[in-house]
Length: 184
Image 1 (cartoon, one colour):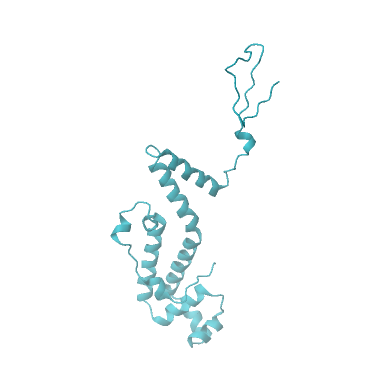
Image 2 (tube, rainbow, N blue to C red; image 1 turned 90 degrees about the horizontal axis):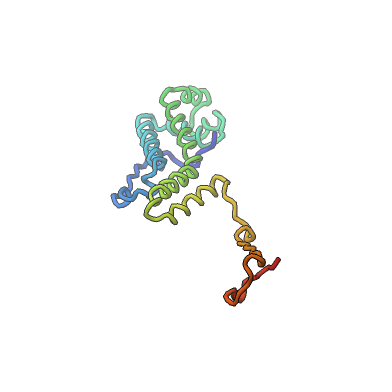
């Protein structure tokens, strides 16, 4: 399990509601389903923590945020290792540990998924009115997925071959300076 980097559960339990200006912007990160899910998880953790004894919540936090043994946790909270073991088996503590684990997994995977979701919405929303914005968003999505390749300059070169027997040169066939012409 990936360890959380939280110093205290109170930080995680602080409620955050984005301002009304942010809620009206469809591309604001706070309106993304991933951010909404994170707020729901934080609210569930806050409710669970408030319904528990503070020592039990502290033991759950230590279990979720460190690789400490029961003896090390017991030393930090001033209990015996057997008591810590019993607390960790309690239903409310198991529920909090599950919430913290789910939150940790969500945070680990949400950054990339969040970017993809926003780019996808930008591509769809701008498809008709601003196709260049849509194409740029799709290019970024392709870079994320690894399917984007920068084309070589040689591939962007246009070669025109004219058969001089069928279409001989005339005075109108003036080649501008800087353009390379290869005659065959």
